[in-house]
Image 1 (tube, helix red, strand yellow):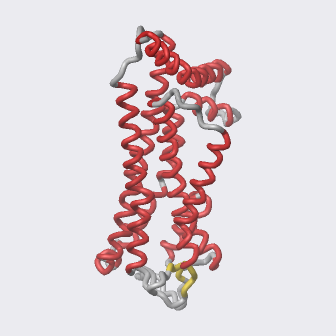
Image 2: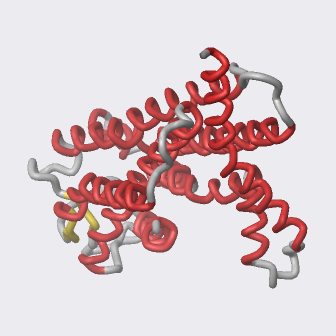
Image 3: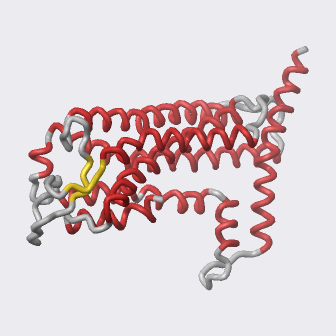
Length: 297
């Protein structure tokens, strides 16, 4: 969504300091960015909680389809609610001066896609407290929750041993779980690295706006920070393709008509085998725990 509806239009606006795309789309662009950021991090948090329950508490029932759909709906509703102020308070303003006001091209009437908060300031108290709340809700709290979840999962997978002798099948299941956890941890770390400069930049806009926005390279600084945050969406498919056999094989199957993509039926069957191993892992964990409990009786 960000790549399709936001990045190219925002890049044009920052480059030219003039909004060419109308008032309605001005609202949509400002709304889409926080919407997709919030939905991405809330989805990662939901995945970490699901992995925590599946690995640390394997005897609990699996998530039903109804519950999964409900969680997806809650994620998007919560994300839309968090992003709603941008949709409400953003309009085209022909008189307001944008943050990056210095331009080499003389424009007599400049159309500014501006967000004017209720205190009638671009970077006043309303903006600061909204940005701070947004950072806490979509950055620090989810990262703390995921850090705790994956730390406990790591202790479970790397620091404990299953009762009895470890079979080859159980070893494959354990390795498959570890690989998935490594992949998700990498996704979370890259998310944290990409979006931290964005949050810091916008918080500094309140306290140090005169210094930050009057800098000779203010536009370039903003574009680099903006690019780094938006680029986060690009990295995940490469991570999945690198560390997830099923995703890599499915990717090859979808794009098998391209001359540079080669896939075989053996790869597909192998990926299905890994998927079956992952599905059987919970059953094996439950059986191992049950056997241990029976041996104590």
